[in-house]
Length: 289
Image (cartoon, rainbow, N blue to C red; front, side):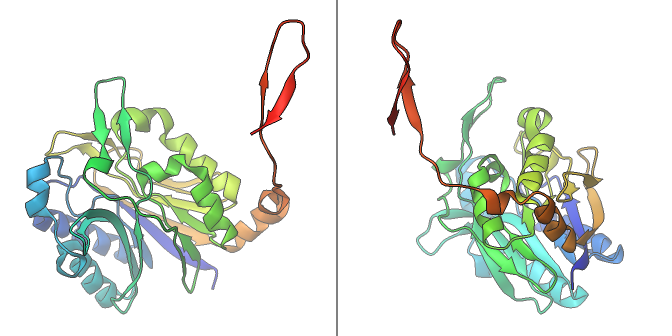
């Protein structure tokens, strides 16, 4: 089976996991009613909490997490795959993980992925983020072999690291993902080009659900959840920051076709890098590094 209907749900998660889980459920049900058999939610579906003390009471272990339980129940009831783009999970060692969860139509967790690249940045508008101060980065890329696709995982800031997606594509992924909570500033500048680039360079479908709007904890996110085909064409987009659902039909045979036309995954070659120093009057000389 190479065809399926995919949905990305756009949210504006607040600080209350219960309210967010209720919104998540309503949007998943809307997506399923539109025929989606794979539904993806954005990064930090469970709660958007910037305050360190508040995080301690808002987040819990995976077996007690409300969004994870809601996703399992809905996947079982609706007979669909649900990809929780991420939610904050307390690990066994007590540290927090920014974790994606994939639930099967039986309601079982078939894959998890912990965000690898931490959003530690200082933006021009004065925003400063240190995700690594709150979350422990993951170390393992993940590709899930589903009946209708091979699904590669990533989360938000990961999208700026093409080597992650290349590794997943080489491992067979024909659908790649980057559910996000992009800031408004970085989203306006880079969201579309990064999403399309990852799809094009890997000959894969790209599905990225997003957070959008002004959140209770004060941050602003860009929205614009998006689904892109392997040729870089936008199949569906939430062209706004409001909560909602976008849906597109995915035919994974188009990934194979795109890779056949431009076989860059096969054509890649190993190479070394030389550093050169330009001294006046002397030819450039390279030194392998």
